Image (cartoon, rainbow, N blue to C red):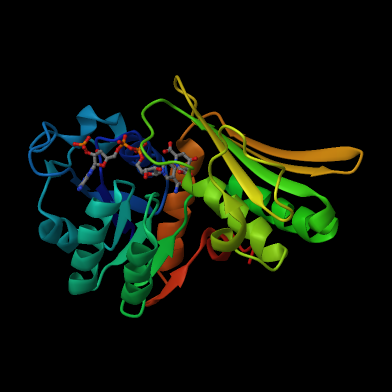
Amino acid sequence: MSLALAIAGAGGRMGRALLEAAAATEGVRVGAALEAAGSPWVGRDAGDLAAGAKGVTIGSDIAAALKASDVLIDFTRPEGTLVHLEACRAAGRKIVIGTTGFKAAEIEKIRAAAKDIAIVFAPNMSIGVNVTLKLVELAARALGPAYDVDVFEMHHSLKVDAPSGTALKLGEVAAQARGTTLEADGVFARHGVTGERKAGSIGFSVARGGDVVGDHTVYFAGPGERIEITHRSNSRTTYAQGALRAAQFLASRSTGLHGMDDVLGLA
Ligand SMILES: NC(=O)C1=CN([C@@H]2O[C@H](COP(=O)(O)OP(=O)(O)OC[C@H]3O[C@@H](n4cnc5c(N)ncnc54)[C@H](OP(=O)(O)O)[C@@H]3O)[C@@H](O)[C@H]2O)C=CC1
Ligand SMILES: O=C(O)C1=N[C@H](C(=O)O)C[C@H](O)C1
């Protein structure tokens, strides 16, 4: 029996990549494709978005979509994801959340829902980024406070949140390895006479432009040397494949909040 997936935000960049990846992956099938009510895609065939998804009509009724599927994969916007999350909770369905840009209180809602349903929630589902997170953890622990940490990211011009969820996660991992938090030591803007760098701070800088899929670099700048750990995405397929692995991982879970490190066996 194949795992039936509902793809939210089907008409988006990730929605299309997910439809293509699902069609090319054994053991899964698209049970439903969702778009927000009023979207010009509603009522059309998902095959118009991704050839492999032909035969599924794009709908906007989340309850109906969940009836036709085992797991919802959601790469939309925080406000859409939270509505879908509550629908999954009510229907007893699992959810993979790739959306970024949540506020702390919204993340608490995801955490609370994981008491009732199984969730994978990760700002980046590519295997390469998740290995990069481990490298950053190792570097931060080994190098210690003598090395200044700064995170740089660049994405396409249509991205709406900054810093990226991945950049924040990279910073969080470095902070945790040093026994601190981004709330305490994150620096999110530098402009004008900033003064010298505050010891122990973790800085973020952001670029937006063109069709850059996603670049992240973590700098460890120390006395007489620096390490730069860089990941670059060339395509969204790796995110989509990671999300499908996450959905398959959830098949054998009934509750709990899981990360990609659990899915990929990196925890
Ligand atoms: N975790 C990961 O590995 C990755 C995460 N992302 C994250 O995924 C999210 C989506 O990215 P991307 O696909 O590039 O974005 P797009 O803007 O291309 O797609 C978003 C989709 O969600 C739909 N949508 C927007 N708001 C709502 C809503 N309130 N309810 C239902 N549907 C809604 C949009 O519809 P419409 O166009 O009609 O508004 C669109 O189809 C972002 O948060 C991004 O950061 C991206 C790549 C990888
Ligand atoms: O919006 C994107 O495109 C991406 N968003 C995610 C993020 O915010 O980290 C993941 C990836 O970098 C692409």
